[in-house]
Length: 441
Image 1 (cartoon, rainbow, N blue to C red):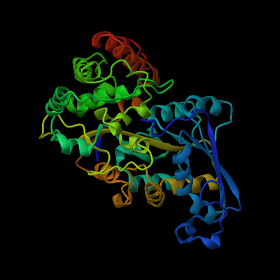
Image 2: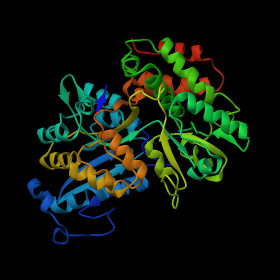
Image 3: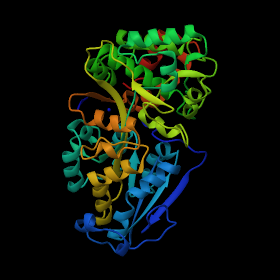
Image 4: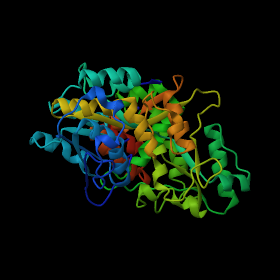
């Protein structure tokens, strides 16, 4: 996959959740022994007599249970006790914990920029050779580059997402004769058609995400930059080789604003206050037709909602500017890094960088991985199967979420805040000028 690759892969909770695994098959509720488990896949790791490895990350609730289940057999067969703690505050607190010597053994970090910060401050251990070998085998060089700084490789990718999906109701499209657009112009024509039909507003969305409010809007901008200006300009923008207020970025804001700032197309009054998890749910009630959100949004639809071409909801990728343009998508993922070293930590890191782990996690449902050893047929929906195939397509142009690659002062600060101000009435030029002025010198 060619690339020059957000976080928020999971639903935040009101307070930190703690889950642990000690030789169990799920979340500590069911004891199992190696005699009950096929351990042939894990013999090369050896056994560790109950050595404990702690892991932390942003993954919580159901997704945490699925993560734990993905290493359950490994833990049983190697006799390693793995304690996982998921918290919505992981990103904000991990540097402080590391500085105080209180970091977990392993961190699942959802932003390359945060990996870079932790590495620059000397908190991270270089990845073991076994992890680097797995990464070289199962990921593209671009993925490896996202966790390589000053020629030191710090950790393997884990899960992934593809951004720029537009969710819709297949039943509504069939009933009203709506066609999936093949260009951005056709997407706007579809928007105008839905608005003219008058049943409801064409689009729905939610920008609220606590301290990260505004981030869904950055995804819109990134998708328009990639499709309208192309991958080279996208890279120049992310690396600040062109200023944030370059005409190409102004154009992307204006294109997104044709929808996001138009009260005939979207509920502009509730846009900022609506939690992003709830942003697309009005589709299920026939209150809107289109919702721009990543592949990971599938987990938000709720129990009993079928995600399929003929199901309750499905999605198509935001189309290119020209129908003949090659496939180009944005996305995100996590990196598994270590703050400490031990043989048991190396074993856990190696397992989590393997195709075995990736297939087990995908089989648990609700997510995908860019690991090339993943069998797409294991995905929990046709959409996620398609997503894996996109991630494995060597001809697809893939770019990591831009705000996650930018310096924290911009990507997770002025850009998010700028989106909120822009949606509240600030002009495009005022917004991009302010974000440009915040870029670290």
